Image (cartoon, rainbow, N blue to C red; front, side):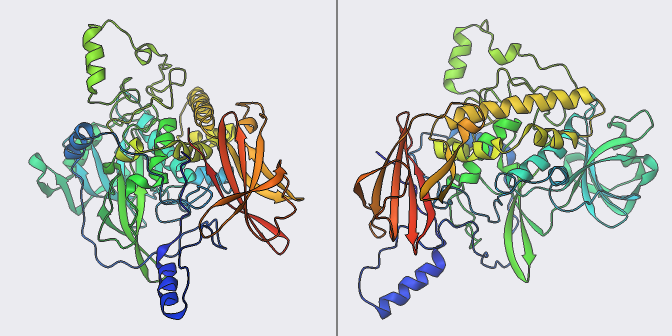
Length: 536
């Protein structure tokens, strides 16, 4: 059965039009299949919000819930896409590099303008307990930063991962913090008299210079005595806690689509697989209330990228991560018992290169379809081939030099590290393109020129497959019912002579897969109104 991808429209204003029509006219009030503004590229301005409470997600609860309560779910199409299957700009996602190529400078700059911390610094809070030491500081311009170090075992690894991650995910379309690598000297730091520190049992107490010394003692020092640190600029707006990968936030009037049905969260699986972001979970997100032109609304961010690539923040990533859940499923457990531990999995013997600044990351064993986050993510589990295809388009928009440009922002001291990490990400990128472009007809960027439908074959463009033979048939589209009526004798990609006004469709078949492209004709002009891909 053909899965029809619903046309996405912002409901509020059209509901008003329908309500008005009830009082003004009689007749068929069924919604049109397409509208004159399809495909929409950006959501309307959000509706204003008032005061919203802080909501936290308990990490252990989320881990247990997602690890033990997941089950099979029926296939449901993504609900936040336009008629082309793309995600319109919103406070969740903004089309960037894949839609409008960013310059090398823009890729390296990432979100916002340059906000590199300027010394001297006032330490305003610290953390001495736990695995990873850290503190918060304000620079000489009173900007607040969250500060984290590298582990002693792997200098440069975690700080580089956090900076690289913020830039990749920003270029991919998400909202991320501004992350910077800074070299700080002890003389640059002073404890603010109002500073607090987390003590025993999580109780806060006044912070002293000695507490700062204790934190710095756990941070590797460079030969010149300075500390290499990750400084993450506090996000704009009022924090109200993380978003979840399922359900909605009921007190936000703009949060109307269940998160597990958002394409940018389903497709995030593919992007996380590329960058090995195994710690993709609710706890590594943050919603803030921001204000623009007097309008207050919620913006959704991805944060904390210290556990991407080969890093696990406080150590090199366990080789298992990315290949299996932390909590094995029943089948994995049984297989391990039956093999008596003698069966060596491919990732256990993979060549990780031995570069401490990278940690454990490779591309030879990597299989994008088998990749796993640390524990099940409800949006990832509901992804469908068209979600994966959309995400693969984002990944494949990065050229080899684009990837190198962002890797360079990690400020590695060795060019060999830059070279190796770039090669790994290029290879992982190509595996993603091959895997997900093969599941659907990978035709995109449709247009009509000289009376003919034009398209870009993404698989052929990237050298994954030679252009194949295709068959095309044309239909007239009833814009009220969506019914398709065949146009006799019309084939190929030329617009039929009778397609002078209204909506028409061309169904393309290739290698046992099909897709349908919808065209709007009016006044001698032809516009692509939408596209649907049939899933196998």
